[in-house]
Length: 230
Image (cartoon, rainbow, N blue to C red; front, top):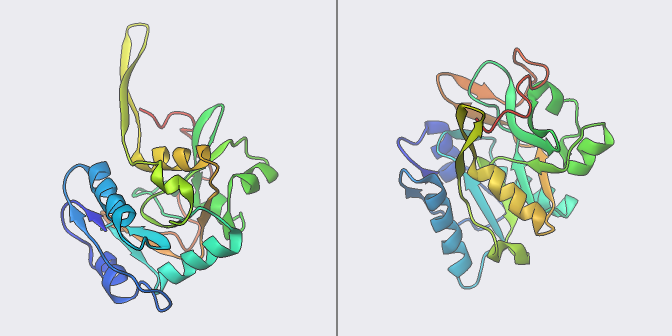
C-alpha cells in the first residue's frame, strides 16, 4: 500500500483484514509525497526478495475492496493468462467516469461505468476492439491490481509521471500522463496482456463514496475524450 496522508478505513480493512484466503500475503506500506517513488520502492522490494513472489498486488490508501480481492484478481489473472488484472475504479466526481482508458490514434478516452457494465466482467484491448472501440492500448489503474511477477517484463518497467508543457501558437498548456498510464503502456509494449475486471467491486473514497458495482453517473460516454493530458 503506497500512501500519502491518511489511510481510509475501508482501505485498511481490505489491506489487513481480508486480502486473501488462498495465498500468503506479506504486507508492505510506504508513505511519501512522491507517488511514483513510493510505487518503485515497493516494486524493488519485491524484485529483490529471495525467492521472488509469484504475484505483486497493490491497493491505494483511499480504496475499499471486496473481501478476498487478491484471490479473485489472481484467479482472473490465471484464467485469462494475463500479465496484469486491474479492478475497475470510479473517478471521484459525479460523471461516472472510470480509471479504465481506451487509448487510440485520437488519444485517451476514459470508459464510463455505463460502458464498462455493458462489457464482459473481465476485458482487454481485444475485447474493446471486438465491440467497436478504436483502441490500441487498454490503460488501467494502479489503485487495485495484481500482476504475474514471474514474467520477464517485471524487470524492465518503472512507475513515473510524464509532465511537459505544450504550445499551440501563443497558448501554453501543462500536459502530462499519470503513473498508471505509463505502467500500462510499458507492460503492453513488452508484450504483456493488460486486463480490467468488475469481478472485484471497489469503493473510491473522496468527498463521498464512489462505487464501481453499478452503472451510474451523468455521462454515458467520455465527453472530454482525447483531452486528458491537460
